[in-house]
Image 1 (cartoon, rainbow, N blue to C red):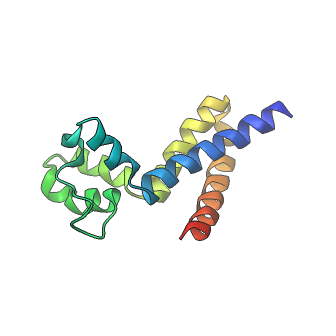
Image 2 (cartoon, rainbow, N blue to C red; image 1 turned 90 degrees about the horizontal axis):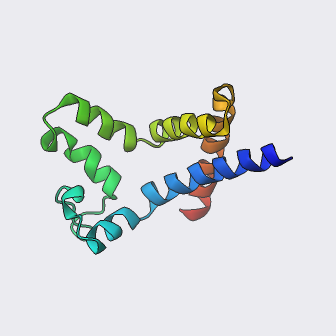
Length: 119
């Protein structure tokens, strides 16, 4: 029973991270609050109708000359990709990488349902 609760909590944690990253402006607000504006790469929340991940993805071609950085930006700006890697980390924390597919499926379902309820 305790293992099931740990599994559910890890899935909920990954879903929460994804919701905060893709559906809120929390990262931008905290960077502005703590004066980490360099991490925003010129993003201004009032100028476009883009979220920070969307802005980062669009500007990655001009902001980063290294293909490695562009690849990493693509990984963190795609919900499927970010969910995949966060699920790998969650399965590793859980102690069984073999449960990764279960983590990933539940994260995708939970994120999709939450996204529909929110938006």
